[in-house]
Every structure is written in structure tokens, then in C-alpha cells.
Image (cartoon, rainbow, N blue to C red; front, side, top):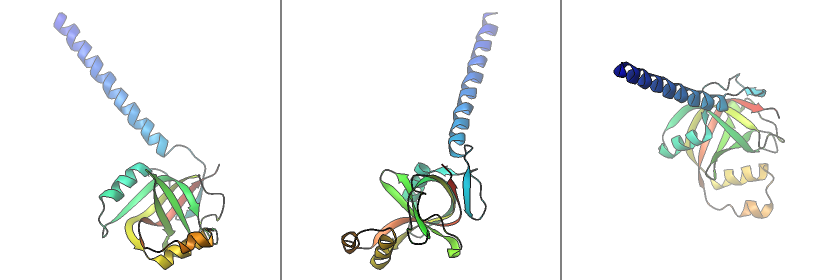
Length: 171
């Protein structure tokens, strides 16, 4: 009888632990794909299956400059092109950002008001060295001062995306 009670107790604990693990996983999945009202740009995509910006940063850090990764990422917008909306930057955490352009220059995002909004992007992730003239161009598009633009004297290795679809949360 004691053996039966002991086995029953162990089985109950195992089921409870498994349920707790599933609840934790479900909670994590919901934080990425939670029900948010999004505006769609480019290809129609969904939030389902998006990885976090922290997971993406880890992937970037393990990539070689020749690697390309097709991915869907949930992040926060830190800046957009003030002239056309033809690029944006994403917060990856740990003071790291990713620069995002849009496939075939086929769509744009809002020039203003998207900063600090949640976003989901779908596309290709890669690492690229950006030349000085291009960095200055982007700084000008972002509304940087003449002094800030002139201070750009070295190319920069950047985490980049070529997005085919973007969701931006409406606040």
C-alpha cells in the first residue's frame, strides 16, 4: 500500500512539473505573438513564429559575414528615415541595433511616430560593412546635425535586414 501511495505521489509531481513547464512556454509564446493591433507594410505577415530581439542578437553574434538567415523577429523600432520612411532601426538589446531596409524598395514605413512601437519584421538577416558615404546619407536622412554627419569617418560593420514584410503596432 505504501508503494502505491509513493508511486501515486511521484506521478502527481511529474504531471504538475510538466504542466508548469508548458505554462511557462505558453507565456513566452504569448509575449511575442500577443494580440496586438498591427499596421501591415509590404507582404502580409503575422506575428506567429517570431523570435525575440534577444534571440536574434544571439543569432547575429554567431553569424559569419557571409551568412544569411531567413527569420521573423519581434523588436522595437528606434528610428525611421525622416525623408521617405525607406529604412528603420531596431533595438536588439545590449546597446545593439539592426538596420532594416525594404525588399526591392517596394514599400516604406511611417517617417515619424513609429519610434518605440513594437514591430515584427520578416526577411533576410545578414552582416554587412556600410561605407562612410552611405552612413553619412543615413545620418542626414535621420536629421542628424552637420557636426554629427562630419564626425562619421569610418565604415561600420552592421547587423542588417532586408525585410519583405513589416508589422508595426498601433498604440
